[in-house]
Image (tube, rainbow, N blue to C red; front, side, top):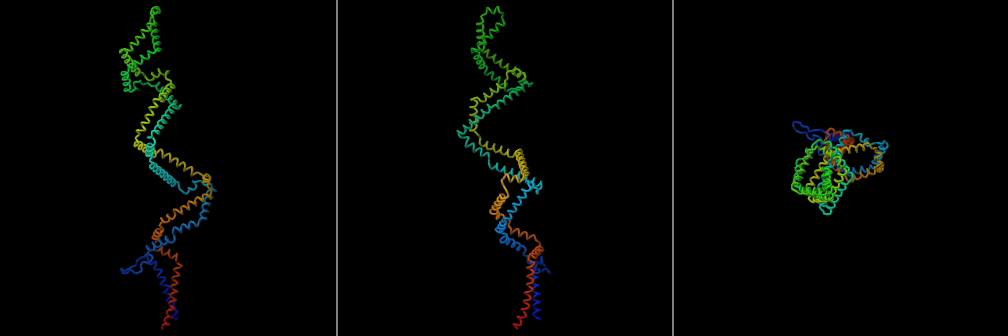
Length: 477
């Protein structure tokens, strides 16, 4: 009977002490005080050591459970599942003739617009960085320093530009353009009510009169030389004969030797043109002619010239003048001089300024963004079947491609990504978010069977000690 009583008491004590110990792991949840003194073992062990336990749990999970190697092996074991998933998705897409926009239907329009804007801004940002990195001004200057300062290259450049210029000037398009411009100018001038004086700058008029003052003797010399030619001389003598014959009667004319009259008249004209008086008269006549011309309306001048203005002839003379050997030689010399004296710093700054102006222009980016929108719209409305056909892709090829990408990702990046996750910190922070009652419930839910077993085991061990205690006492006594 003593053994049974001792066993019962030991069982109760063992069961109660283990139950109390388990409770004291969690309870009380906070410190308890009596008369200002803190009771021992308050709060419970787990609430008291929550920070240390959270940190230890996090480190244990990171170092022994969720290691990069463990996660990667787990992912690699599911190859068949991954393959079936890829092939199943592709089959669904191809069977239903999905378009790309159908796959994007889960994204609302506002978010899609936001993503497009982000893409456009990123595109512009990268383009500006690329242009800045290229430094086109520096590249151009380096090219010019290396190539254009070389005599052979400079000669090729100047001759090439002159050749292109000559080709352009002699092209049918240029001739047609000049003809059209002359015709348009003539038509416009034939309706112009202004006086020529209103159009011509006073400085030009003064320059012309100054030219007459300085060169009238030279002009007179050229006139004398011109009338001294045999053909001109005969023409002048013929005019003199006609003038004399038209102003005297035939009877008198029969007594006058016309050959001598012609000769004397022609000689008198030569003497007059060689005299100072002739020079002054020519000077005055030219100025008077200029003043009379300036006092005419443009339309009247054009009316008098309408029969003599021939666009084709003027164009021919212009083209011949623009492509003359002397002018081409001068152009070639100007090109060489300009290249040799080229201001490379100015060129560098100019190119950079123009590039910057161009790539930052609203018109450029408006066009680019419009192209992007149109391209995205075309892509969104494209059937995925046709896209895959155009790329010669089927389910197996896509799977192999994705698998290779996935393998490279696992091999090169996944370990670093997992380490960057800092699993220990994530677990620690998560445990900190649990209140103490939830932590107690969580542990009890996980280990309820084990904790009950510990409690029962305490009762069994207490009963066993209660049985052994009287037996040992009897043996000793």
